[in-house]
Amino acid sequence: SFSILQKYFLINLPSMKTKLIFICTIFLVTALLYNGCSEKEKDTAEIKQMQFGGFESQVKWGEHLVTLGGCNDCHTPKKMTPKGPVMDMELTMSGHPAELPPPEVDRAEIEKKGLIVTRELTSWIGPWGISYSANLTPDPTGIGNWQESSFIVALKDGKYKGMPSGRTLLPPMPWEFFKDISDDEIKAMFAYLKSLKPVKNLVPQPVP
Image 1 (tube, rainbow, N blue to C red):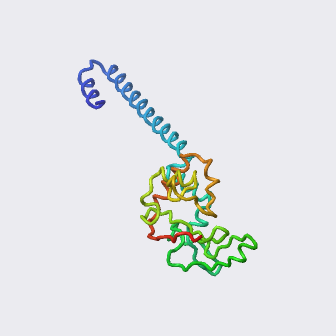
Image 2: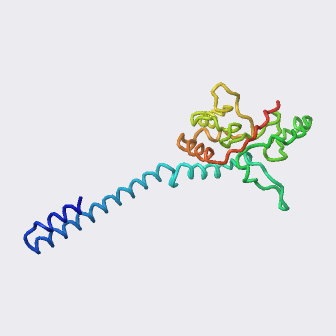
Image 3: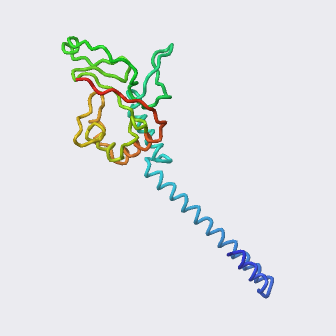
């Protein structure tokens, strides 16, 4: 539209001085409009960052929270190396490998000493029985069919599969520490988990 106006006025304006004034005005208005758009985009980006805890996206914020919360410690399988067990990031957050045999349980020792023991760092034995770390990848065997609201219930109320009528999550899942974090933080964690590579792994049910 500016180009059309320029052509019209340059042809019809009577004097060179008037034409120069008009050209300068056009450049000034264009510069002001461009600057206004840039400031608006900058303000929008800053507001967006504030919404995501200072991170560029909800997924990045969620990744930060999941890492900070140590979720990989239990939910990511380990592989043995010369330096000991390390996280197998090809199976990130896929839970206890279904193909592993159940760990041996010395009930007398556990009841006598109140021990909580683990072998693979994805299965845990204690006075409650045997519990297995859940698959938190977006595969149907994990949280692929979950809704955001279910994940909030799981973390805040400690309910299995995020169902209000479900059983309470078993140790060592520290859901009590998550009940005071904001819904926005939990939504960010959920968004990150949904962005991971789906891993098919049907984790065994706990053993009393």
